[in-house]
Structures are given as structure tokens and as C-alpha cells.
Length: 388
Image (cartoon, rainbow, N blue to C red; front, side):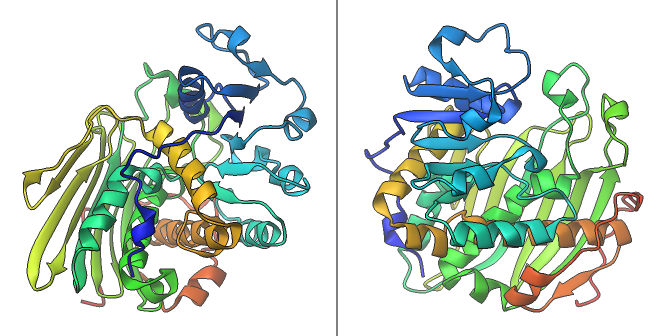
């Protein structure tokens, strides 16, 4: 059921001594770079783009050649680049690979075979590879599991997921960065959270998914500030309803103009016969944690990116490789499932039809038939559920 050793709420918050970041000038890479520099880590950077004016290059080692970067001696390597630019193979070929942190998506949309190949390649290597779903590394998630672990019997009935921000405002520099359809880019964080939560409660991802996946979604086209960078239309807003076994999931991810900035999770269920409600905000600067309407201790300004580094480092010291790569962690096998759920959601949105997948094995092998030329359909405001 729930692993009591998973706690991240305590004084043991180690950091790696050194970090190498590919894509350090990008939005996510820069977040980790700022944490690393502020905490005094030894930092190596590979990014062929011009360095930001506010970066003191004297505080880091900039590596000019990609091959040299993948040979650097660092405790942790963070690949904050798009899947087509990652050279994970060069790290896996090393005799003693560093701890590897990858960004999502696991592969470009429509490339599930690449995800399966990554799972196989990592399994055949001595490497530990984790994917950056920040909420899974956050102490708030550990505290949710600690609360649920107090019950002798616990059942989750409903999870509400919201993750949104304005990615269309041309005044925000980050919005010039190319994105893929929101199901693969943003909804995947929500899907990872709910799968992780339910797997911890029910005893593994297969137990959750073997209860069946049923979902229906609606999407709205993204209107980028730089349309010339998008040869194909991508989705910028997605609403969905999903059942994982008997658990109802309501989700919303939104990149449209004037979208509110939110990273909210609402969990309802029954523990030892009594109903409970957990309400959590993971939004940087506005983090909040409530159980049954009562505020819990929480630092609203806690850094999600520092938590990723701390928790990944602690896990790598506390658990051996077989546990990290085979257990309930954001490893390649887990991330493949989240990618496939994203793909199913994308397909449902594009066809405006419900999708049912009967088991974990079927989900792993499922192919959404991704076609970038399949035009998004307008959100008609209805989420039809043929199974209800």
C-alpha cells in the first residue's frame, strides 16, 4: 500500500555536489540553474544559445561541445531539452552513469515506440533515470501520502486536477518557446500525479490500470505569439473526465490568454469510514495545503525546483537502483504510462469521442495514431460519458 519510507518531510534534504544542465538558458533549465548557483553547487552548462545577460558565467563551467557535455563528471545530469535533442544514449553508455533527470514529454507526440525503447535501454544499463514531474518530488505529496497512510482502510473516490498559465501573452518571453499539444506538455503532470497517488494507495500502477481507463476530453486550439514556429496546430486548452477503475478524475489544463496561474489538486475519499478532503496548491509563491478545510503548515514560497534536486538526491541514497527503476518512482516505466495516458487524451480531444483501455498492458502497447495534420475540434462544452 503506502510506503512509509517515502517521506520527504524532515531535516534530511541533501543536494548533489555538482550538476550538469543541458538547455540551461531555457525556462526549466534556468530554474534549476538558479537553484544550483544559489546553493553553491558546482555547475556545468551546455546550451548553444546566447547566455542571458544576467548570468555570471564566472560562476559556472560552460561546455561548448555536446560530446564533451555528456562525458562531464557531475553527480546529476539534467536534460532540460526537447526529446529530439536529448542524447540519453551517451549517458547510458558510461560505465558509471550519473543520476539522470529528464524533462517531459518522454518522446515527441506520436512516438510511443521511442518511449518503449527508452524503457528497454535504461533497463539494460546501470543508470538511474528519473523524469521531472515536480509535484511527485514535492514534500507536499509525501505529506498527502503520510496522511492517507494513517488510515487502516482508505478509498479515494474523486480527484480534481488543475494546471494552467497564460502561454499566449506575447509580453512573456517564455511564450516564444515552442510547445507541443497541451495533453503531452501540461496535462501529463496531472496524469502523473493521479497515477502516482492511486498507485501508492492501491499497491502499484498495474492494480490501478487493470481496473480499466475510461476518458473523454475536449480541447481548444493554441494561439501562439509566434505562429511561424508552428507548422501544425497544437492544443492549448484541455478539459477531461476520466475513470481509473472506480475513481472519478476531473481535469483542466489551460494555456490560453488570461488563464489563471494554478497548480491545484483536490482529493476526496473515505478513511476508516469517515469522509476526507485534501486541497493542495503547488503553485510557486502560493503553495497551500488544507485537510478537511483546515490549514496545514506550508511554506508558500518553497522552491519546487530545489525540492526536485533534494528528493532525487535523497532517493538515490536511500533506495538501490532496482527499487528506483522497478518501484513507484517517476522512472521510465512509470513515465511511459503517463505518456500513453496523454496520447489517449489527445486522441479523445481530436475525435471528440470517449476512449476505453482495459488494462495496464494494453495501455503500454496502445497507439493513438498521432497525426499532426488532424485539426483540433472546438470545445463544445460537453463531456459525454457513454459508460454512465
